[in-house]
Length: 205
Ligand SMILES: Cc1cc2nc3c(=O)[nH]c(=O)nc-3n(C[C@H](O)[C@H](O)[C@H](O)COP(=O)(O)O)c2cc1C
Image (cartoon, rainbow, N blue to C red; front, side):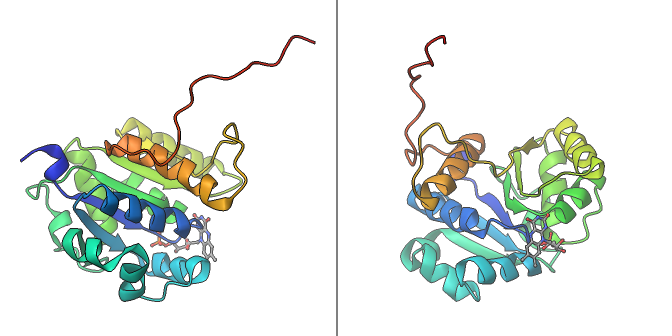
C-alpha cells in the first residue's frame, strides 16, 4: 500500500485553535486522504467554544458529509484499544492540531494515558512522522523543555504562528497559512496558499 493510501491519524486537543483543525480536516478530505480522527474532551470543548461545533455530527456537517463518510473514521480518546494504539496498524503518521501543552507534555514523557497520547507514542516508536501544533503564549521553561524533548524524539513541533508576508486581510488566510505548513510536513500535496516566490527587499536607507 502506498504511503498516501495509508490513514493519517489526526488528533484535536484543547488548545485554542479549533479553526485550524476544521480547516485541516477539510483539506485532507479534499485531498482524498483517509483520516483516523481522535478528539480529546477539551478538544470538543474548544470546537464548541471557537467554532460552534457541538458534536461529531456537527463536525461532519462542517467538513462535508460525503467526504467525511468516505474518508473519516472517528475513535474515542478514552479507548486505548483503538487501531491507532498499535504499531502493527500501518499509518502515514500523525498530526495533533491544535496540541495543548498538557498533551504535548504527556507525549514528551511517554505516559500514553489516552488514545491520543498512545497513538503519538506509537508514531514516534515506529519512526513515523509526528507533527504537533502547539498554541500557548508565553512559554515556560517546562513548555520549552517538553518541545525540545519531542523534537529530539523525532517530532516536528510546528507552532500555530502564522506569517504576515503574504499580507493577509482575513482570518481564514491566517488559518490557511498554518494548515499549509502542517500539510507540507504531513506529506499532503495542496495549493491552499501560494508559495513564496521571493519579493522586493527594502532599499538601503
Ligand atoms: C477556552 C480554553 C482555551 C484554552 N487554550 C489553551 C491553549 O491555547 N493552549 C493550551 O495548551 N491549553 C489551553 N487550554 C487548556 C487545556 O484545554 C487544558 O489543559 C486541557 O486539560 C487539555 O487537555 P487535552 O490535551 O486532553 O485536550 C484552554 C482551555 C480552555 C477552556
